[in-house]
Image 1 (cartoon, rainbow, N blue to C red):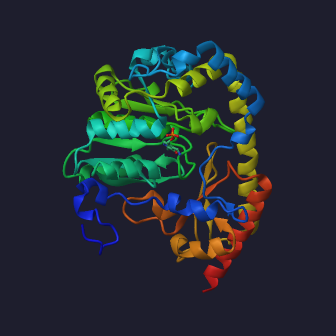
Image 2: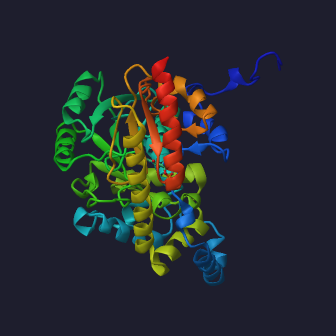
Length: 407
Ligand code: PMP
């Protein structure tokens, strides 16, 4: 084997790996996690708001009562008891029995991320078209790129995906897209929520064009001021595949999520999951079941919401106090993120080294587009840093923007 190239294995890789680039977010982690840097770049919930003594007791009870079972393999579709509990959780969000939901239609996954990956395995061939909001969730872009699909972005504004832009994107497709991927509620990265009127319009367009929808809903329960909007899946049974997760309402480290899909698709998803991981972790599924059935989990979600709402308020107030008049940003009603539009001519990617030198990190907007757009935008996280750190981080960022604007 030649030792002259940086990567001696290049010629041997599968074609799909060449389209896979390290996400801008992961590349940032090493610098952003230094203690002197205020990171507004992350996407983590604040798990310090969980009571570790109570969880410790819960895990002890779990191992005492169900230890041997929790240490085994389980069915590929996931544990029946947890699938029943997940139906109760979905019913709270409006996806209940009248939406035709049954535990049989739930497939447990290693987070919503594996759910996305399973849907890609089941639906996407190389060259297939996927429609997605522009900007969209970076992890979804990674999955679609790995599947060698083409992502076509659909424009959005403060009211979410623009129905007319969806019609236009459909008209421009040279073949029918496989599905529309959407995060309609407190979207990552913008924090924006699809309005009620547009939910109906988007469903109508998708029905007329026979376009399937992948609805990714990790943030719906993290509502601050407003009622959680009704998920698309609550109104449409066969045309929407719904992704859920416990990553933001309980703990991302457990890696438990789910897909809700019609029986035929569910069967394919289970086959794909068995091929990937045999079965989801019995231990973490048992932990989530124990948590949902024995702990005040709804109260805990309220604790997260109160904490994040306070931090969102701090971030919005700090932005208003420090940023130039020609900068704008979203005002999310829930979730973890604010999306900011820089003054004309500034480039968030080019500005990042300076920001890191000034000990503040953010994610440049380019990470959330498949086509290199987003240089004028950035994503700011408010769920993880304390209010004090948010204030300091935004102050530092304002200084960086001010210097860049003078160049
Ligand atoms: N979808 C979206 C929109 C997300 O923001 C995230 C996590 N950041 C995921 C899916 C993946 O979540 P999980 O931890 O459940 O895999």
